[in-house]
Image 1: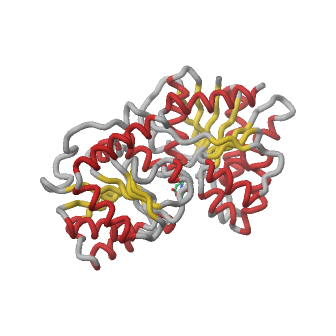
Image 2: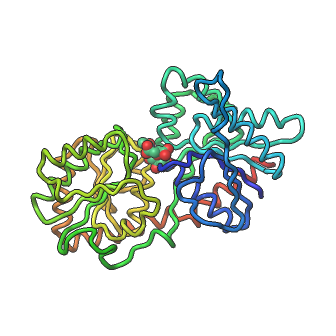
Length: 373
Ligand code: GMT
């Protein structure tokens, strides 16, 4: 099949998942065309069967104060679909991608059919899509998609609750992980990541408010009081300064490392002992799944779709969002108890295997086939 994929190319779960999906589809013999404004961050090298079509955002016309990216994207989706003979267009994150795909499909309609599949990822429904200025167009675009998927049952329920979503059947297709890249491996990982004898605690996100990154530091401070440990913070965003300040206030700043945005996180995850994700809400928590696949138990919040990924007390630890003390205490108990730690690590690996690419990608293939029929 020839599959067009539109996603945000920037660091974030939806772009990561869309890119991993494109790569898996290409490995299975499909031709994949990414259509977005920059090379997706996980698409680093030439891969047979994968093409990238850049949406030009540099054009300037004196009348425009803001470049109409959505129109440029819709045009590009239309052009690529026509030129490459796309069978389906799969867009990730509703805003504005489901809307531009609708436009592209309508522009093409006189000549050919182009089924549009929209995958909802989280904040497109739980935050942005609920803003007054986006609500109606988000609902419209979801309802006009030929197929809609949500990355968790929680997100499906939220979509129905928030948007009503008449006339659209939402399939739950969970996020997945590539077990070849995200695999457990003994060893300390990169030299100098943490001093000898330190437990390595890791967090990855876009450091937005919903991630509660100050709670990451607070949980870590609780661990640090109990044992030598280093916190590795990967990513960047508006709350980073607050997290840095929190580390200073709690006097743990010398043991906290901010590494910024990184493309390849598997090596660092493999070197970690614990992954902390205390978000206010998380539709799925792809980073948590990737950590688990690397054999790293997760300490996170019992919020949104995270309980569909982590089973509390078995493959990780979940506490209500904001329960820093409980998260910290249970993390310390876990890190101190080698038998419990090993059991939870093994359970995390087994749980992650249920979300392997081999199990999940065929669900998308089946959906494409159905949409084309
Ligand atoms: O977490 C973010 O803010 C990034 C966002 C995105 O769209 O890139 O992530 C969402 O999609 C991921 C992939 O499906 C999910 O694993 C994340 O849980 C979800 N984030 C939220 O719901 C906050």
